[in-house]
Image (tube, rainbow, N blue to C red; front, side, top):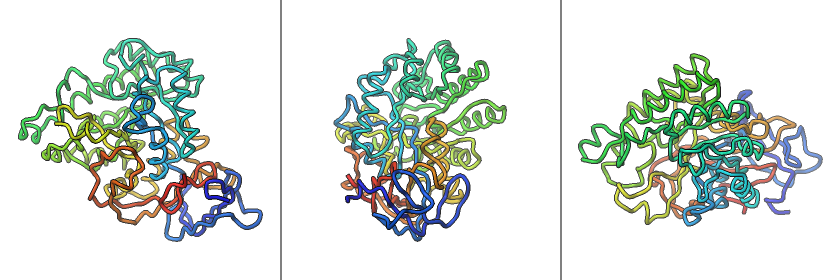
Length: 430
């Protein structure tokens, strides 16, 4: 019996961390479900002494590029990267070619994920047709097809009236609008954060205000309509403050932050390397501190990778020509523990697992407590292991990560999807 076919697994001696707390426990898995005990000997025994066993991670924000940009990533290679990063589910962003703005493309993405069989791939759909910001997509049809998050990620919806209609349309469908907050009239030609470093380098700047104006606008639209909103990749001090105040008012708002916005600053652009060019841009250390504080106090609910692969030749272009984005799926845990070291491990895992699962509408299957009767979607990791990225070992087709040579803390050892080991001893099983 091969690893990928095994359905009777014992994970022995680990420290279980889930929403109910932290404890020492063996975990028994049979036929895709956690059970009290196995009937007979296990097919596979995993020694988890010194390791953490948690619900599988869920990424709210992955660019898997297929269809249309398979030279940078495919759903299979992105799924493998996700599994190696401890993810059992990812939400695939809609800026594909063609756009995920209709049921046929959404179904294609989901099927490709099922064929790969490495993690559950849940397509998002765009808010507007072609992400052009002019006409709403058929929300009801897409919701019936299983879509729970709608976003024009890569672009913010610029028209406030259209965005109001989107919230009103979505309210009765049990779906969430996920906004990329950027007022584009303020960011044209920008390559990095507008601040002291930008001025010193003589590069076009991207003001924090471009994000904060749209965060404020959509908070008020949520207040008006009562529909839920999720804010993608928050990056500024004031954005965090705005969301904190909105939550204090009881508004149905959630938010995410990326690993790079809790670890890297705009000063790195002094290298002129496009590896550090992202959207929204890397900000100042004050912003980084505020985003970290937002994760610590629950203002920001989730750590989401914004995994954005690009082929090398595009990232090697000058800053003004290179596309924004960096890899994230295989390094998210290591970056999070390394840069949120004073945060309880259970709270970090919450931001990677059950909290994003709830936002994505996947809480009935992913992010579940590690107890008998629950689906066996699990991550086993060493929370103390220090490691560095080796580009040749990455599962992604692309190599655009700034974390080469950067010490990370926390390494995934095993990932279990529906009772099947997709990663064993740090290597993908297929």
